[in-house]
Amino acid sequence: MQLTKEKIKEELAEEVVQVKTKVEVRKEIDLEPPPEREEEPASSESNWLEITVALLIAVTTVIGAVVAWRASVADDASGDADFAGLQAAMNAEETRALNFVNTYENYGAYAAYQRYDTLGDLIEEDLANIEDEQTYAFLDEQRANAHDLALANQELFPNTYLNRDGSYSIQRQLGEMWADAAKEKDLKPEPQFAEADQFRVKTNLLLQSLTVIALALVFFTVVELVKGRVQYLLVALGSLTMVAGTVMAVMIEMGQ
Image (tube, rainbow, N blue to C red; front, side, top):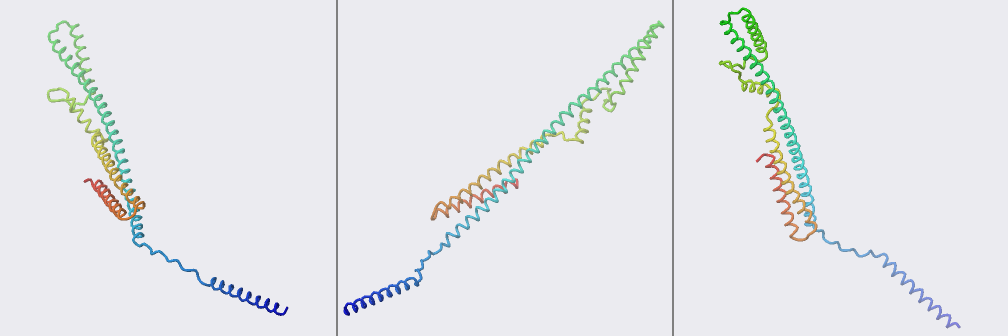
């Protein structure tokens, strides 16, 4: 029985020792720091490319916005010039119509003056051959009436447009009236229409340069989708396209 108890004690002691050993091993394992992961070396070249592309996209966007603004301004200017041209055309037609009405109204008064003055002169010539007093009195009254009507019509037209031979200068009156009206309002629509055409051409050219600049954004965007040397090729193409579109827009603004 004693041997059995001693064996049991020895076995228990051995088990306790094994348990303690396992516990100590586990503690050591837990205390050991986890193996550090080897960090992948950062690609400075890739970061530099991404920053460069981002900056180029920002610059291209700003340039495109400025070009779009200038195209909008040119388009508004063409609309204003068209409106001014239409206004000038309406002024010209209105002035021309009024001038013709007033001129031929004056010319009608001149024609009436000439008719009654000539009639009075002819009657006066006939009076020298009239012996009958009653007929003479009647014709003399007709002569007086004709001369009175001639004097009345003479007040209805400006004498400044009479030529030396007594004829009436319609073209001179029309010309002077047109010149007087031109001092007060615009009567020449052609310059405004020509200016509107120039602004329209400028707008179309600026939109074309904006299309070139937008193409540069496409190249810069595709850079993120490819790898290797193709990225640098796309960056170069985008940069050249951006510069070309910008130079084109500047030359258009400068009128060259």
